[in-house]
Length: 328
Ligand code: UDP
Ligand code: MG
Image (cartoon, rainbow, N blue to C red):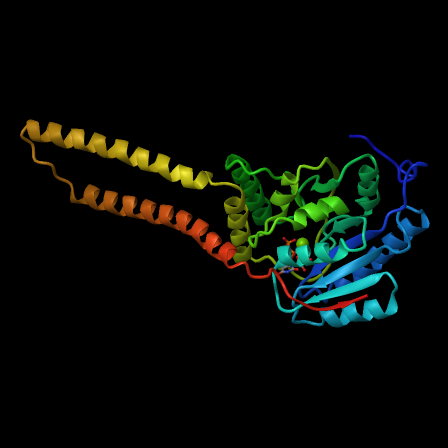
């Protein structure tokens, strides 16, 4: 891996760019003051080193928090020049909150970095991301070197999910979540994707712009608890697969083929038994196959229903989020 210093990237041709750090927040009152201190210190350092302009800022997106998150954000906006707050009307979900931040920031930022509020993503690699932008990349993905800080359950489910996604033919960057840098034109291109079932980590690689990665060690959540309980994580995973692949629908056909072959084998067995003069017995095996085939059919129906449900939400074209206020 190529190691580059912070100073290396300050080449003469480098233009000074305005950076927006977009941070979606949902009930993050426990962690936000630490996050704000660290992000401000990082931004100050980058401004001093002329890596970004003095107009660069942190944009907190409050995703309808019910604790005191917005009060904190509002206070930061009042006390610090480089902090802005976007308050969404209600909880639109992490991906929509992120999108709200990106759509707002592209109005005056040249570069946008998205990062979670809990600082699990190591923000000290942001200067390296900017440097990779100057090397000609429109997108720079933050990729976790390992998942040691995740629980066994989270690590295993995440690995299964990434494997399943790639088996289904959906392209994602392995071990990358939503910590990434994007140029304004990449954000503009992303905003042109009008879908409601957002799965940004699958959508961004689709933009096709030149990209690179920076590696970092995923840290523990600094405070507070995960806002992604199992149910939300599962529906996010289903969103990911259904947004990028129709392979599950095709698999239903192959499953049907397998069942057809099994039924032909059973038919051959029945005919052979009758020819021999034996009666065909087997209440238990009959019940077993009825329940087995019934279960498989319901699963197949639910796969089809997952796609239909998404066609339904896409068809309504409802707005992804509503903005209550924007404080600069
Ligand atoms: N988040 C959000 N809206 C939601 C859920 C989460 O804006 O409905 C934010 C949350 O505040 C955090 C980020 O999304 O900044 C990622 O959530 P979290 O760290 O809880 O997820 P995990 O790291 O456990 O997957
Ligand atoms: Mg987290």
